[in-house]
Image 1 (spheres, helix red, strand yellow):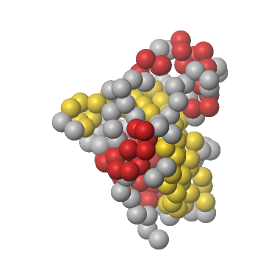
Image 2 (cartoon, rainbow, N blue to C red):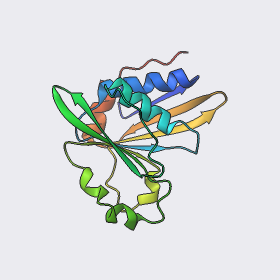
Image 3 (cartoon, rainbow, N blue to C red):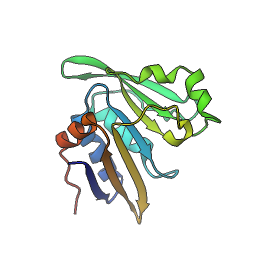
Image 4 (cartoon, rainbow, N blue to C red):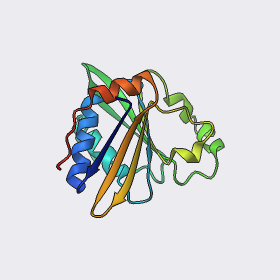
Length: 161
């Protein structure tokens, strides 16, 4: 499967997709989230982190630019770094902050507003597009690497139809 499309009828659908993605996570995965303000990028990430075992608060990193979390994955601790680049003025800020080093074979990086760090942001394994559609959201996931393909192959999600 190279891409996946669904309509999420409500916030519960977004949370269910986040939980499904949590079950498909792999170390080293880089996920870029695309969508307008209010499209559900942070809600999806929050649901993913909670389903992956993070028990605490999941804050939007709008002002801090990044928030690190630790989860257990396959019997080992994996760091998930949630980036929100909306307030970045230039791609150089991404480099100056040392964020590029977080993208490695061990960490899972989830990036909101990735276009703010083009062209210095490492390419994603998985691209997620969220669009408000009525009371719900349309979502599309695109695999762009072998790791992204493996993640989509592991994804088990059936939206409420």
